[in-house]
Image 1: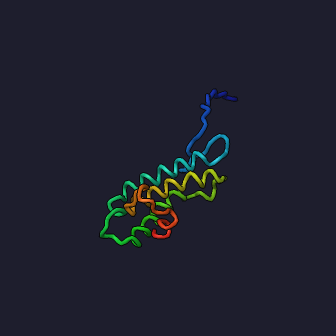
Image 2: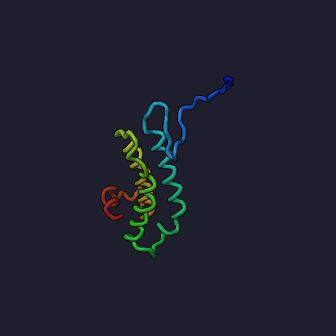
Image 3: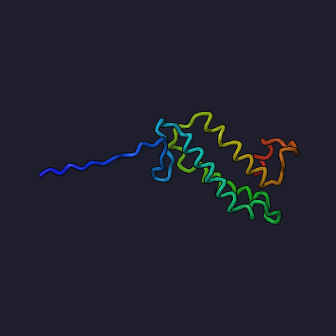
Length: 118
């Protein structure tokens, strides 16, 4: 005896699979956006430590690298990364580093030097 089952499937443009955002067109844009959001959420959780002047800049940089940068880049080796995706991650990272170092854009402190500090 054969039983027929009718199932309606929903068509979506992007979806989460094993914790990674995938899009129908196969690019990494959705994954990059999701990882930037994850990075900001982690940053907000760690703001008391990352902005604490009693914690050395070296320790704050290590904390940033081990917790924030690693969460933003986790599983990125599986993305079909384009130059635009790399460029999208850089402003988010620099905003976090500037906030962590208490340096505003109007201070005109070069980003290259900030990266070397963390």
